[in-house]
Amino acid sequence: MAITPMAGSSAPLSVESLQERIAALERQLADCQQGALRAQTMHAMFEHMHLGIIIYQLEDPNDDSSLQLITANPAARMFVGGFDILAHVGKRITEIFPNISAYPESLRQYSLVASTGVSQDMGDLPYYDEQLGLDAFYSVQAVAIGEMQVAILFEDVTERKRAEDRIRVYEETIGNMETGVVVLHLTAPDNPESLTIIAANQQASYYTELDLQHKIGARFSEVFPDAVVNGRAATYAQVAASGKSAFVGEFPAVIHGQHEWVSIKAVALPDHRVSIIFDTITERKRAEEMLRQNIQQEETILAQQTALEALSTPLIPLNDRVVVMPLVGALDSRRAQRVMDTLLEGITTHGASIALLDITGVTVVDTQVASALVRAAQAAKLLGTQVMITGIRPEVAQTLIGLGVDLSGIVTQSTLQTGVSLALLRPAQRGAAARN
Image (cartoon, rainbow, N blue to C red; front, side):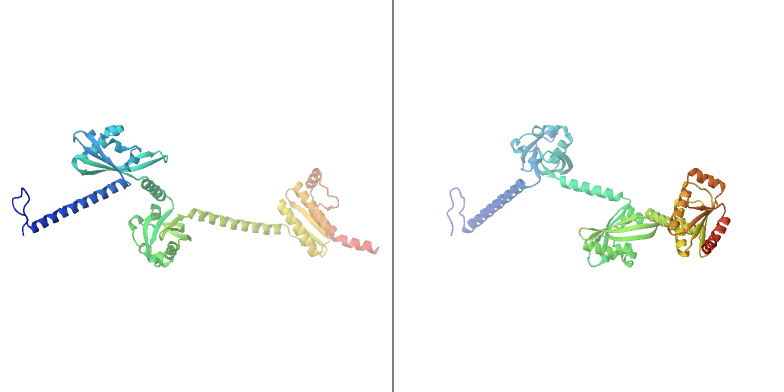
C-alpha cells in the first residue's frame, strides 16, 4: 500500500516511513518537553537557592567595565544592599555598582573568568550587616557558564567564619595554657583500649615527655601502656561513656629529671570524648609540706615550752602542810597563769596551809610580775592557804613600793631560808598557843 505524496513531494511515502517520521517527531517532542522540564527545574533552583547569583555578559574582552547584567536570583538582593537588581538588566556593572570602580582587581578577575572560561574563587569578604548591626562575611566565586559569560556566586559564611574564629581562639587558648590537655575519643563504649588520641597541646607533651602532636590518631593504650595497668585508662573510658567528669588524683612524677607532683582531672566532653587535664601542683605540695613541717615544729616548740614551764614552776612539798615554788627567769602572762594553775593544783593535792613563792631567781620584777604574785596569793587565800613571798631583795622592795603594789595580807621574807624556817615553825607555835 502506498500513500499519494503531497504536492511538492517527489516520491510517495510508505506507511513505514511515515511511522518512523512520527516516532522521530515524538522523540523530538519528548526531548523538548524534557528540556523544558529541566529548564523549569533549573529556573526553580535558580530562584530558590540560598546562594546569591548574578550573571554578566562580557561584551568586550579588552574592557573590564563592559560586563552587562543578564539576570540575578532573589537571593542576590541581600548581597547588593537589598535593591531590585533585576530592574537593571542590560546595564553595565559600573552603572549598577559605581563603587566597584574602586576595586579594579575584582572587575579584572570577573572579566578574565568570562573571557578565559576558567572559574576562580574570590575568597571571603567582610561586609556590615545593618539589620544585625554586626560585621559579617560572604564568600565570592566567579564561575564561567557560557561564551563570555560569568556567574558571580555569593554565599553568607558569617556563621562559618565565627565558628572558625571560636575554634581558633579555643585552639590558641588551649595551646598556650600552662595546663596540659589531651582529648581522647572512646570509639567502643565497652572497651577502654579503644580510647584514641584526637588532640593535645604542647604542655601535655612537656608533662608526658612525648611528642603528642605526632601521636594524633594513635590508641591511648599503645602510647601509654601503664595507664591500662594502673587503671587510669578505665577511669577515662568511664568518664567518656557516662558523661560525668572525675578527679583522678594527685601523683608524684619525674619530669625531665625533676621530681614533680601532677594533678589529673578527666572532664567529660560530648560524643564519648574526654579531656585529660594535667596540672603541676609541685609548688602547692612544697608549701603544704613546709606548712606541715612548721606545724610539727611549732607543736614541738610548744611541747618543749610546756615542759620547760613545768620545770620552771616546780612545786616542792616540804611536809604535809608546807609547799615551796621557786620561780626562775622572766615571768610573762602565760607563765604567770601557769604559776597560778600549778600553785592552786598543788595546794589542793597536798592540802597545804602555807605556800612559799620564792622570787630570788626572777630577773625582773615589774607591774606584771607583782600583779601575778598578788593574784596568786589572793587565789590561794580563797583555798585557806597563806602565801609567803620570799627572796625580796632591796631593789625589788624599792620597785614594789614604787609601783604601789598592795601586799597587805601577804607575808614577805628577804630569803627563802628565813621563809622556810618561819613556815615550819608556825604550826608548832599555833599548837603551843592552843595548849596555853
